[in-house]
Amino acid sequence: MALLGQKRPARKPTRREKEVASRETRNVSDADSQWLTVERLAHDGRGVAHDENGKTQFIDQALPGERVTLAIHRTHKRFNEAHVRSRDNAAESRVTPPCAHFGTCGGCDLQHLALPAQRTHKVQVLSEHAQRNGVALADIQPLGEDEHRYRRRARLGVRVTDSGEIQLGFRGRGSNQLVDIQSCSVLVPALDRLITPLRELINTLEAPKRLGHLELTAADDQVILVIRQLKAVPRDAERWQAFAEQHGLVVGWRVGRDPVVLEWLAGTPDAAYSVRVGERTLRLAFSPGDFVQVNAALNQRLVDTALDWLGDVSGLAVMDLYAGVGNLTLAVAAAGAAKVTGIEGSQGMVDQLIANAEHNALPQVSARRADLSRALPSLEGIDLLVLDPPRDGAQPLCDELARHLHAGKVSHAPARVLYIACDPTTLMRDVKMLTDAGYRVTRALMADMFVHTAHLESMLLLERMED
Ligand SMILES: C[S@@+](CC[C@H](N)C(=O)[O-])C[C@H]1O[C@@H](n2cnc3c(N)ncnc32)[C@H](O)[C@@H]1O
Picture 1 (cartoon, rainbow, N blue to C red):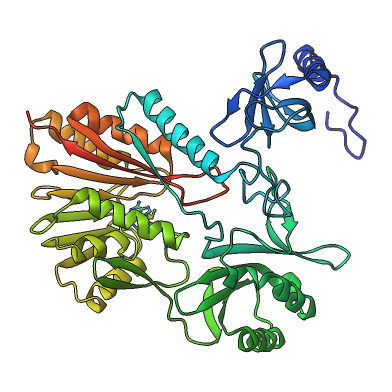
Picture 2: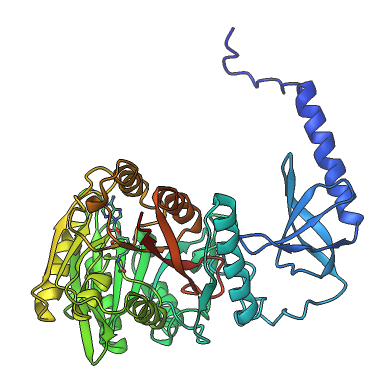
């Protein structure tokens, strides 16, 4: 019978729930009082230790060799998540985090670890993923820059609290709550210096609650701010225009829901970044929302290294899959490839890629749109395949390539594959298919594209073994 209008009596916990509750309580108090030694770093940058019962503890901001007591904030059947209550000693690799918000802001994971040690850790992560998948790697070359103000793009959340206070920042560590930040030590200065003025401006808006988030982009010659706004507020548009003039910005807002309309409020967007290839400097134009590598210096070094690995590409037919606005497509063409085809899922980026090829006088470049999770291009006659997929990797394509090789259709399997990846898990899953089918990894690199975070970019060169 339904309990209409009555308060439902509390349900008695089941025996299983009682067991779990008592075990969790015991875990918390046991581990709390113990001194544990941190053994290693997990892939996400947390310290790993085991309590006296052998249960794994993942500990925020704890480094190998440190003796710590824990405060456990989440228990699971096989492991606990914890932070440090007290620390007996500091690892040699421990440094003072450069940012005051480190630890609460969810943007960075590793600011407490010296940069060389961050890189050693990321090389180790890539190597472990390879081992787990049975992929043989040559030595992994680390690639990094000492400059940690690298992010040329950021999305800042905006929240108005019940008391009317404006919060501006990123999501917190392990939470959806916004962390109000005063500055961000990984943003390029042109973006970081806008945070305080932005908060002040938002404080003066007529309808700050209408703001969703702010997207900041530092292109080569201009800084672009795109405001996500649920409904247009004309008097706020005037305030944004004055702000744009004061700070030399191009400002637009995306208004509404289904359809979302982008309207430019101040300035004309003309975003571009550059990539050097030999004596040439390529100009790659992009629109807000297009994919662009966030770290300009590392992107250049990645392109330099790719071209160095590939050597003489003159006369080659190249296919660049997941091509974006042509970052790698144009670089390989400018290095001398005879024919380069870029394939990309977004029509806007395909159009941009074609325009970029024209602007840089690279007539051997063509591009087309395809959803590479469904429609796979023919690789017949292609000498070099470049793959740069998003986090979920390029499984359908690698699967097809492997099937061609297993079937002896060598003409459908390019002699070389250059695979660039932002997720080592899916990278090694895909590469294992290729190495099982007859490729071998001849060069491997870990690019520290996302300094102070646990993320890493990697690049592998695979060569088809001759029978
Ligand atoms: C990591 S980015 C690489 C872009 C480019 N290679 C670069 O260096 O700037 C991945 C690209 O894959 C595109 N993409 C994502 N899913 C796709 C799909 N299913 N089919 C085709 N392209 C896709 C994205 O739009 C994005 O431009």
